[in-house]
Image (tube, rainbow, N blue to C red; front, side):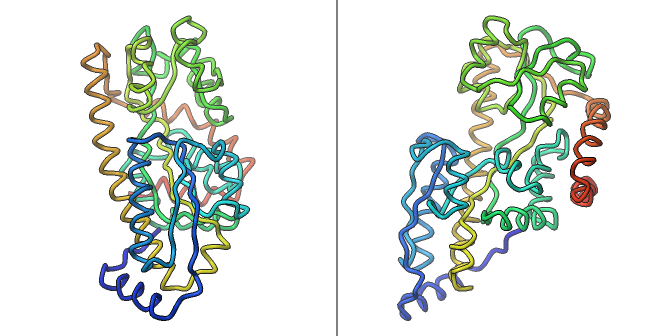
Length: 327
């Protein structure tokens, strides 16, 4: 959960820091996997601009986009160890490091994207943030990464039975494989770069992802049915090295957080526009989009996935319960 501070307060903080010659002066480096023009890239550049402005020039941030400083798992470790100060990460690959963050990868844990943000900006988000901080990553603000839904080339998916026997590409995570297996399908973990050809040649029957990924990769060209299951809603975050953050004065922490939150507001606005554009493009390209009238049977089918997960992570049951009761 983050707290917004007024512009006048942050401006006063920056002025005081500048007059006092604060000891926090630093040149930071930041990692982002996305390319130019992507909502996150624009928002992270805005974060860098705001960071310098709100700290009175005491902190500057040089962003490295397109994964130029390494893969996401490598960059997560670099931020944890202090080789980088800042990273824009998906919580999926943070899950194996911080157990609390892995909860967001449970299928159908969130009702929809607004519900996800209500959780993250409330008590549930605080629990996740504390778990991440204990592993060296402090989340400053949450970014939108949309909802992942099923797509394939044969038919709409409206019930779990429609997945039966279907070979579905998933990310390499036991939770995602378990989800497909419980729906009666055959999970097929593989690298994202291989999915287009796998769909085209029938190595897999379907896959799952958000609107921009479905559109930008051309997957809609070889899998023309998109079913709005929204089974995975995994956020992204701006993370800072815990030691760097804890070494800041309270005033500087407020300024850094303010910059991050404002960048998140921009990212969410840009993401919504990008989703709408991607959906329009694929529909104009002939894709059949179907709303799933009742997600209840899908959610009920996930009971064994949750039971297996919580059997191995009993301490996380209160967090799962908290998320599920959050309105």
